[in-house]
Image 1 (cartoon, rainbow, N blue to C red):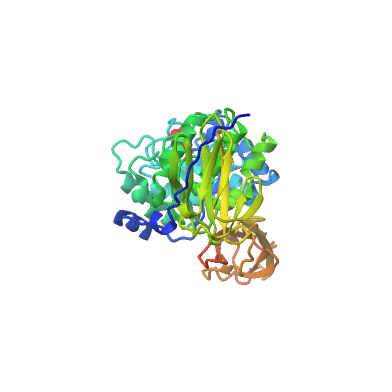
Image 2 (cartoon, rainbow, N blue to C red; image 1 turned 90 degrees about the vertical axis):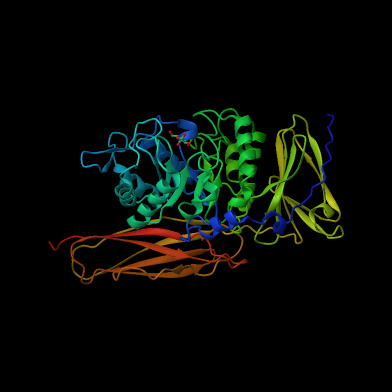
Length: 514
Ligand code: GLA
């Protein structure tokens, strides 16, 4: 087959040039939340892209949570899961939020417990206005503090806050109030702002949230739209200076694996989201995935680029015709990620010259292909890369032939549940185990000191697994339910930068004496 030759010389904008910032950007970053949440882009699943509002219910979410585990997705970092706009709660006559028991018979707290026991984290959905988009559920307007308290009681870890039915509301004040309300409720919750770019949240939302939608919806429920997804990626790309650890541009949930896309289109979109350090929130039906979709969504080498602890959003450094080269994404080990995206209906050959990328042409560099998982080199001068039609080549380029994976943290459970027999003094204990799926060993997790008197947590290490033993002494405790949130921190081993904190719930029931 004849190959159309497109020769592109890559101009590598080295990190220093690519990240000069204006004062507004500096101030947005200076005020980013420092709560240890999602210091790498959040990963998980939300129902909207595939299902829309129907048939969202407890059974669907539980089946998806099971599929996250069984498909291996949990073990490469996907963790947040829960309902989007489905009819999951009402506002009752006392103005409190109550579960729609018809759809969620275990209650929204019961669903959260199920998710936490699977080693996953619990995501919910609400709206900043009077009603959600379809007007099927109440929004938070006027009840911000009460609603955030209820979300905390449901043990929610992540909330997507939509911007429908907000006529007359000031966007900055509204999302600030919601952040303050969440803070007052005392539970660390990732705030995902969803104003589709309205109000330019990248300029101010780092101080009140962790990620913000930069564009409109990526598809209508049930079917992916390739042209729209690519347009959204290119819109989001322009905002690369505004993202970093704990504050992310969100070009919407993934459409990978949905009807309407070829395998190469799935691979291309996934790679673009990885290069842009975008949240990896899958949107397909995880219960029915082809082998190819699973292989794309769980490509840990691509995910390693997305989850890099430096948290830098890559961007286009050169494009010609329908071929673009994305770089400006230095990684924690000193390597660089590079993506070549060919939107042509014919293959392209792309030449990357070392001299174009600020590296001495005599330097011998190793090149790792993150989709074929093959390393070549050392190459001096540069490298030529053939790229198929509507496809990508995703690379890591390094002075060494080692391509370590950054830490990818997976817990066996985020819920410790204990029950004493009665109020006599007794010691109970339960563990959670945290694994690191990255290449480098991690130091011991450090447990934050603010624990109640009845709880002690000790940490032990066995290879890449660490066990947090929670010991409870019921001595002096009265009958009742006790709850604590444990926060453990670590540092990423090479750069020494902080990692996303691990939070989990410890609950204790002390029944009365018989
Ligand atoms: C908006 C959001 C979508 C989805 C729907 C629910 O359109 O952008 O992601 O949450 O609302 O109605």
